[in-house]
Structure formats: structure tokens, C-alpha cells
Image 1 (cartoon, helix red, strand yellow):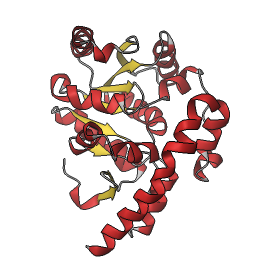
Image 2 (cartoon, one colour; image 1 turned 30 degrees about the vertical axis):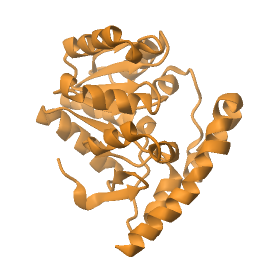
Image 3 (cartoon, helix red, strand yellow; image 1 turned 90 degrees about the vertical axis):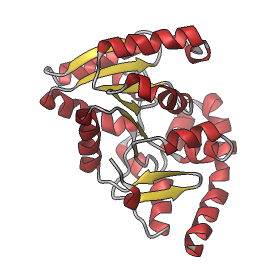
Length: 255
């Protein structure tokens, strides 16, 4: 699948211009094609991290699909004259994708989050979509991907379940690096980075209300929930996005 004509630069990475329904169709098409692949959902923090992280840039370069997650990126696309039809986060994708998977007979594997969270998320999805096939659930311990043997065991466990789509909830940029490292080994499964989605489904965390998200203030909601964890990210690191956005606009105008 190639979407080069709908590829919009976001600093050193990119996102594709798709409507929400087109994104679901594209993921299903990837799963049916049987060649594997990765689906990433860039946000402001990904754009900032990619400035100094070549492995994250490589993950985006190898991605089958990149779907814009975050109002600031939607606004940047508009300023570039390449507007994104929809904001499409991993958390927004999972339930409609599960509904479509249940209808089309595709199976899901839930990987990541804390012990027990994935199982509760799987139960919630199965309750809403009774015909959904959950191929497996696995919550590997933190740091498993730094241990070669443990990492290999996780890949083998996922592969043995023969899922069509794997929801990878390891947090950024770990999940993007992990998917890029193992996308060939796990083919024909399609790997989708979903961040905190399993926590939301399991009731472990509360998502920002839709209006807050649409106003571009989801970051403030998360900061209020987890100030110690999120302050360095939102109030310090991600300020670099403004400079990256200006550079992206200048480069676009020179073309």
C-alpha cells in the first residue's frame, strides 16, 4: 500500500491524509493482504522525539500507515495547505476496528499494559462485540525488550497465536521501535501502536472528554491527572514543537 501523494511532513516524520473510515479500511486491507506492516499514530511528542531519535525516524520510514493524533498536527497540516480530514488516535481507532474485525472475522492480540489490564480490556471488547476473536493477551514485564531472550520469547508467543492485528501498548517511543524491529518476524500480522488505549478500555485511566480533545487540550487533561509524570513532557520537552513546526512551514514554502 502506498500513500505517498497523501503524505504530509511533520518535522522528520510524517502522517497520511485519510478520513477515519478510510483509516479503518486501510488497516483491514493491510490485514487481508497478508504481508504484515505497522500502523503508527504520531502526536506532538513523537515529532519532538524524532528530532534526536533516528530509530523513531526509521520506524516511521518503515510504517505502512501513519495516522495523525493530536490537534496541533491537524492545525500544522492546515497551515501547510495539506489539511488532515480527521484526527485519528490509536484510542479512537480500537473500538471501531474491533467492531470491523468482529464483522470480518479478523482476530486481535492485545500486547502490553500492566498485568491484568489487557485481559480486562479484552473482556470489555468481547462484551461489546461478541463475535470478536481475541487471539491472545500478553503483559510482558517492563524492560522485556532490552533482554534479547525475553524479547524473542514475546515475539514467539505473539506469532504462535497467529493474530491478524496486534494492538501494541508499550508507550512511545518503545512501541514504535519494537514494532519496527519485529514487523517482519510477526508478519502477516499488522501491528498497531495504541499507547494507553488498553488502560482506557479496562477503566484503569479516564480519557479526556471529546470536546476537550477537539479543542486541542487533551494534554492539559492528562497533565492534571498525572502532573509528576507528564510535566517534563508537556511543559518542557514538547515546547520544541513550535520551532519544528516553523521549520517545516519554511521548508514547505521553499519547495
